[in-house]
Length: 52
Image 1: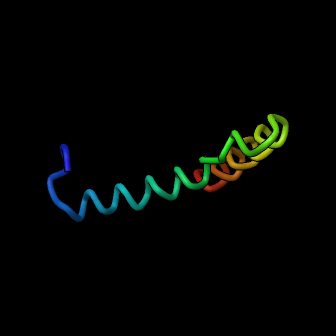
Image 2 (image 1 turned 180 degrees about the vertical axis):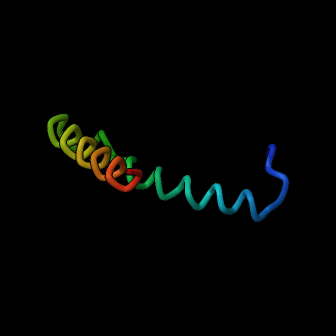
């Protein structure tokens, strides 16, 4: 649990972190570089739009 004061706080962090990780994590070794860059750019644009 590291520096988390409670299990609930840890669970909230892990839940948010997994969503972000899944959104940006793309298996680079399975895609061509151009496809990877396009997908990454689209994910960043969507993330910025959600954060604004």
